[in-house]
Every structure is written in C-alpha cells, then in structure tokens.
Length: 289
Image (cartoon, rainbow, N blue to C red; front, side, top):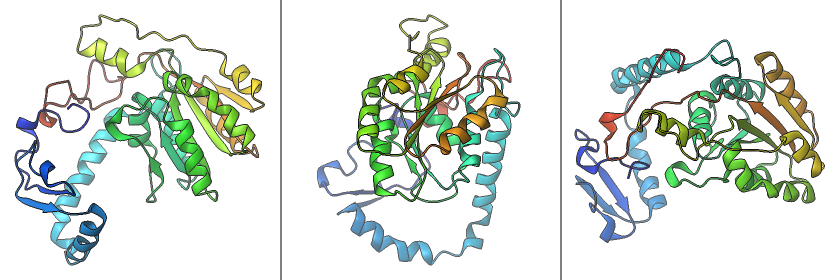
C-alpha cells in the first residue's frame, strides 16, 4: 500500500518492530515483528510511557542531531523564500509558512488530501501537540472543512484553519452552509492550482507527462463564499498573502481565502506505487520544483 507501508518486502529492513493490535489476527500479518503485543493501544502506550521517560536524552543525542540535519537539508532545498514560483503565481509552501507565522503556531490546522496535505505537514512549523489534524493516507478528499468544524467546536479557544485544494474543497463546499448556520469560525484556505495537483504530479513524473483528467474547473471562490454570506479574500502575489490572511483573521466568524498558487509546483518526497520507503523520489527537474 503506497499510502501506508509501501512495498512490505522492503519496509524498514533494519528496524526492530513492536506491533500493537487489539486483534491477534493482525499481528505480523504483513510485516515480520520482533515484539508482538495484543491489547488496546491506549493502555499499551500508557504502559510504555515510563520506559520512554527512563531514557536519558543525551543517550540519543547523535540520533537527534541526525534528524535535525535531515530536516535542515530537506527544508533548505524545497522552500521558496521569494513567495513566488516560476510562473509568477504563489508558491504554496510560502503560503503555508505565512499562515503558521501569522497564527503564531497556536491554531488548529486541518489538512485535506493531496499536495496541500503535504505542504501543510512540511511547512506550517508546528510548535504544539494536537494542533495538526490529518486523515493521513486514507485519501479522504473533502475532509478538511467538515473536520475543521469539529476541531473548532472542540477547541473554541484556538483559531482553526482548513487547508484545502480546489479539488478537495469542491467535494464538500456545501458545508459553508453549516458554518454560517451554526456560526462556526473556521478560516478556509483554498489552494487553487486549477488542477488535481497530486494526480498531475504523478502523471508528470511517473507517466512521462501523459496528462489526463487532472485539469479542474472551479468557480470564483469569492463569489461562492459571498453567496453563503461568508467574507472572501484573494491573494495571487506574495505581497497580497499577509493582508489576505489578516483580513480573514479579523472576521468574527467563518472566512475564506482564495490563494492562486502555481499550477505546476510539485511537493516531495513521493513514493511510486509498488516501491518501498527506500525508493522515495525527493526531487524532480530543476531547483525550483
């Protein structure tokens, strides 16, 4: 499963795997494990916590330093500091970073599915636990807006942002009615590249640019939001990003920000179907990919 493990024959070949599952039939079903534990995950994790606390941080300093180096290398080769991509439109990673900065990393950030999900995970700069909501590899397009409603109601003291692409947003866009009716103050960031972005990226890289059914029509998102009585704002250039985010933050209730992002910007790493974690594609084409 390219959304969870990749090719299980090459999955974490040097790892010592502890498998916790309440169903004994699942233990070791796909990957060989060294320590099988049958039990409720919550109880098992609670029992393991004292063991983690007993490990001295300095004993793992070399490991932490290696992680920091990898993180630095990854971010320094992918971040578009100017805010604009080569087609002149917005660089999505720049927009995500600005949302993180202007919310002081203190909000709740809910990802949809596709490139936007990966941009959020990589560039929001999370500082606090339980602030990143994602459906992971389940492929639930349209997840972000309805999930953000629940997140906002569950933690009303936080500013809640739904981060979505134009494809995912159009799958549950009718939920703007619920936002208005129940006065739920979710801020929606629509990353519009007029594409099913991850589909287009796969077709470019895996299928040699044989594009099919990835182009996506969409409405004027400002007018669409206005039809529900929701204030909408638009940013197409880097200098418009901060004012648009701040305008949405100033709204006492739901708001939508329409970001026109680069149509052919990719996000990495990606793992081709049938391959393993050691086969990740970490870059493609020029430095501005």
